[in-house]
Length: 329
Image (cartoon, rainbow, N blue to C red; front, side, top):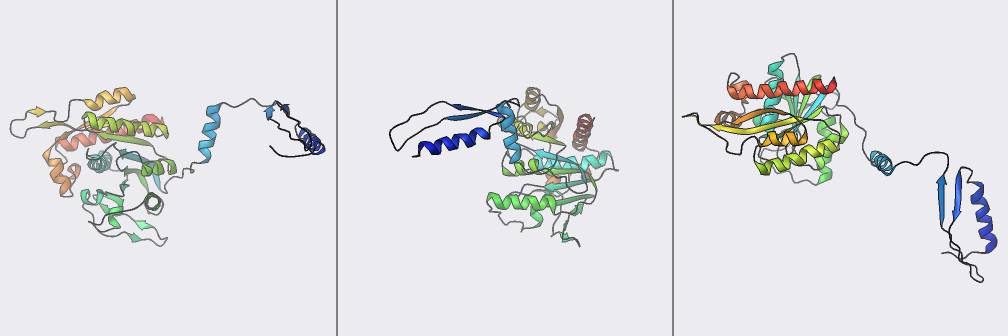
């Protein structure tokens, strides 16, 4: 409440009224005392020419102004992210074998792998790759390649046992470099191995590049499914299509008597898929050969291509391609 003379208030009201050609002016209260005059005005402006926007529309516009504009990765046709709500469910192993399964099913397709798990990169071990990326003439990092799959990971840029103790801004800067400063060549699919959870890295990637779809990996265990659902809901919120769920470690078959045991539960991911309204892309068994070959840097799809385990990954890859075709059609 400011002190002002009556003539000043009159002049102010004349100026205000002159500028309200398309608005209505409403004075809802006035309290006048002896000189100096003290006036209190409550003013509303109502547009009379355009309809009022709903609260949701205004909120959506406000949010959109704060989001970065998505820009495709040069040379990459489609990006597939492989995610999980929590660690330890076999996400990275699934991502690597998915990429290899895509090329095994269709050798004409070119596929790359980006390891976006900055704090715990697994792709160098799984793909049996070591060394530092070379730089091109354009100062872009050249991916390391094995089994015909170009790969990029933070693990190529730091020592094997060096902990990455970074705050969020440094992680975002690293992700930006992995996305924009890599010479991928021409790829039909780029498979991104996401870190577990629903944090800064997930948001940064989904907001900066167009993503064709997300694959959610989970075991049938209830505690894993809770976090898998959070991951799926996050992708829905940022408008990334969820291609489906992969039920990893679905069953253990005894190598001696062939008895099957559902160690982590039976068909939990299928129940979650029905709740979310998405498909189950496939079941991956809990098998010793998958673990042994992964530890040796020889993914089962290439090390034992005729095994039932490799066939399971190839079926998942085929289901992913089918879902992408359905979404694009």
